[in-house]
Length: 117
Image (cartoon, rainbow, N blue to C red; front, side, top):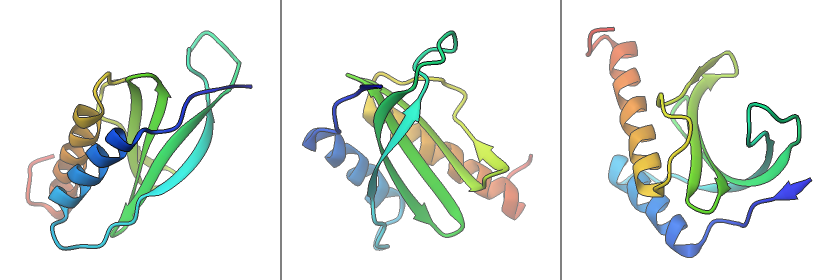
């Protein structure tokens, strides 16, 4: 199985900064993980990729590094209730994590009845 290099300190700082900005004052722990993912829809080969996941309230977030300057992300409440951002892969980590957090905030507003669905 091929592998992708770990998150750099700069990438981790970008993630940490966005998460801290979203939940000011809340302790949100970022957890490293490794996931096996297909880098191409046309391949059955799994590539081991580094990921960062965290939980806030009932929501779980994951950001996967799929290559140099390549990221995928999603959030979910249950394994059957998963959401993406509508973009398959980002080339900027700040854009990836910021988009993920914005989409989740919008979804949270819809769930709470504060935004139209």
